[in-house]
Length: 329
Length: 233
Image (cartoon, rainbow over all chains, first blue to last red; front, top):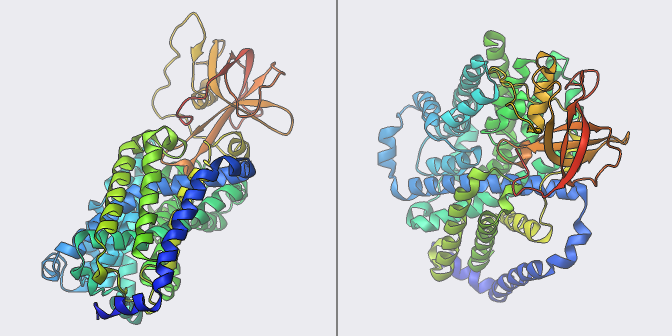
C-alpha cells in the first residue's frame, strides 16, 4: 500500500506537481519584492491592528507548537505501545485521573497539547485518557498557576480554584466520554490510528505533524485576532453586573479571544467589574477550549468529533468553574 | 501540496520567525524573553526544510489515512499567511488606535505591596504611565502630589479634543494588550497622534482612574522622543 499509492498519485498529476511548487515560489518572491508598493495600500489602523494581533498570536504559539510537535514525534517514533501501556493504567476509567495529574508535567501552551494527544492516540492510548491529558496540560501546569498568582495578588484562592476547576473539567470530560461517548471514541481510535507513524523517521513525523497543525493554528489565530480587534471590550463590560449573563459572556469571550493560558490571568484580572466566579469561568474555559483549539481539533480529529467535543468541554468547564467558584470564592 | 511545496511553506515560516527574532521586529508582537525560543524555532524549521528538500521520502508522503487523498490538509496553505502579512504589511506596534478603543477599560489595580514614596530628586522624576495612574488612585495621590514628574509614552486622543500620554502593556503577546493613559492638561499644542513624547508636569489633584475625572497631568513641558525598540511595558 505504501509503495503503490504515491506511484498512483504521481501518475495522475505529474505536471501539476511541478507547477505548484513554482507558483508558490513565485508568489513568495513577488511578496518579498512588492513590499514597497503594497505597503501604502494596506496602511490602515484597523487592518494594522488586526495584523499585529494575528502575527503576535502566531509568533507566540510557534515555539510552543514546535515543542509539542517534537514531543509528539518522539512519542510516535520511539515510544512503543508496550512501553506506553506500562505507564498508562490498563483501565481507561483509572487512566483518566492519572492523565489529568500527568498534565501538571507539561508546561506548555495549549497549542502543544493537541499534537501530543494525537500521537498518544496513535500509539494506542485510550482516546478518553489522551483527551483528558489534552484538557488538563495547558490549565494546571506550574507556569500557568504562577502567572495566575501574579495576576491576582493577594488572592491565593483564585489559583487553587483554577487548579481544581480545570482538573475537574478534564477528568469529568474523560469520564463522560467513557460513559456516554463510545461511538465517538471508536471513531477517534480508528481515525487516530496512523499506521505510518511508526514507519516514518523522527523528522518525517515532525514535518508531518507540524504541517497538519500549523494551518489550523493560523486559522484560529486569524479569527481570534478579528474578534480581539473588532469587538470592543466595552460590549463585554455592559453585562458585568448580571451574575448569569456575566458568566456566560466571559465563557464566550474566553472561547473567541483564544489567549495563551500563560497570559489569560492578566486579562481576567482586568475584568474588574465582573464577579470572581465569572473570572474563574474565563480562566477555566480558555485553556480547555477556544477557537484556536477547536480549529486544531477539527483538523486532527475530524469535524464531526469537534462539533460534539467542543460544546461538551465548554459546558463541563462552565459548570465546574461555577461550582468551585461558589464553594471557594 | 507536493513535498517541495510543503518544504517551502515550513521554510518560509521559519525564515520569517528568524528574521523577526534577529532584529527588533519580534518586540512588536511578543515580550523580549521570546527572542531565543523564536531563534531556535526558526533554525529548527529551516533545518527541517533542508531535510525535506534533500531527503524526499516517497513512502512517507503518500497518503494519510484521510480518504480525500490530500497529503496534508488544505488548511496548511494558511501557514503562509503570517509570513506574507509580516513582509507585506509589517504590522507596527499597537498604538493610539488600540489605546483609544480600549480607553474605557479598567486598568490593573495597584500592586498589593506597600506603596513606596517616589525617590527624592531636584529635577523631575521618571514615572511609568501605569504607575502614575495607580499612585493617583491610592492614598488620595499623596505619593505624587506636588512632585515634578516626567511621563514618557505615545500620543493618543479622544473625540473631545483632549490628548493623552499613553503606554500599552502586554503580558504575553499583543493579543492581551491593555492601555493606560494620562490626560495632558494646559498644553493645547497637541503633538501628532502616535508620536513619542516626554511630558513633564504635576498631577492634577483629585483626578484618578475610575474617579470623577480621568487621571491628568498639568504639563509644563512636552518634548519629542524617539520611539523605543520595545514600545510595550
